[in-house]
Figure 1 (cartoon, one colour):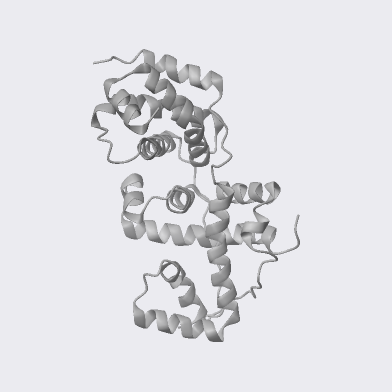
Figure 2 (figure 1 turned 45 degrees about the vertical axis):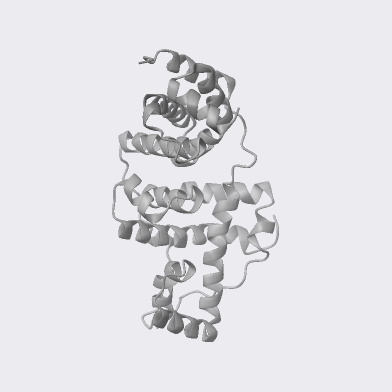
Length: 80
Length: 194
């Protein structure tokens, strides 16, 4: 397995869905190739970075004018 | 108000319950719509449409999922409907953001560890903003799948159903989207703190 092939298997490796024999070949390459090892690490960190950048813990409330617009629109909906 | 009381009120169309839902979950739904649509006006429209769609579909809500999960799915679908009705622009090819290889299969570039763990780097507002901008830069086909899988937490099968494609196509888009996102955020994470 070369670096290009390693790149194609990154998602399955990170998701732990590689067949056992492919996983062993993948890991054998990583022990010998620091470049792929670093690239894998950055691939993992990228997923985490996206999640951290978009977390909604500090989400603000819906602006009042939008609350009013939504409630006005809902009030026009038939109740049956 | 308890989840049970909210579900009861939702089913019966109680307007006070709906106001509670709008005030409780609206802000989070607006964040989701902003990420999906990259446009404030469209995001606001999507949230309004989502609540209307939720109201119309209230009888079908069985309470198997949390109300927040149900509303989340509705705003994602509403946002995607909006994306589909937008005039299609030619999408930028993603290839320029993907890793390159020599004819013998080796990377053309050397990679080194980033300066600090991302949970430290992303603790800075400026870096978090740059990562969000990088996600916005991804071509739409890839951005949507990265958002649904990695950010909004849908499974591959759920994402395939939402974007109306196959699970295999979702996996390919997700992988390429992540590779491209790595390329886009690397300059902000490789060096010293900014």
